[in-house]
Image 1 (cartoon, helix red, strand yellow):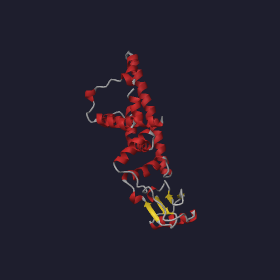
Image 2: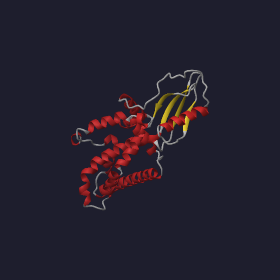
Image 3: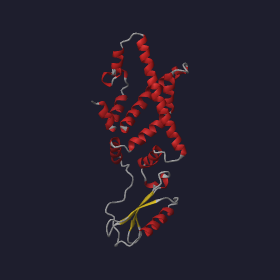
Image 4: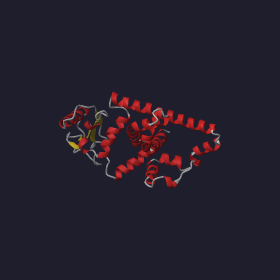
Length: 263
């Protein structure tokens, strides 16, 4: 349900921007217009909303799988240790020694001290795997593969080795989760309040249209039917050509959105 809501929020962001942008000057002469406040609020928070939606979809179940496939197809996957790495001899390093080796290697890169996650060898010729992890400092994270017999470093990965996509997700996902501190959490609160205000003003505008239609004697049954997705009139000639590839791309990239539209 969260992925469905996020997918449709992205649709509303794009369609709302396309509708509002050309009309800003017209709304300047109506400072108290409910529609003006609805659109100005949406445009003001548009970039923040877009970042939060896209970073959330990145690690969602269905859209996340499509994004991961695109990442792998464009060689933007994060660097990973080669499979089959083995220690030169049988295991001799204790976890304390492996921790010290990792801390020293991490410090040698000029990186600040961070919590270290250690994974022990899975057999006699296995290797120690270590990750320096702190989501609030993504550019200081690193990962290591250490020979369990000699303590030598077999593989190293830090911020400099990350791809553009992996750097973006390393920053975007903690931002989405509010892990960068108070300023990050305040921005998320502003987004949440703005989204609630957008929903409230949207419903209020619909109520005004219903009231206006009833006062003018319009057929309300026809008006309500026109608001339903199956009966929504689409005038193909009024929609710019470039919109259709964007629609196709969104339906392909967000399966949950596609499932909710196609039926």
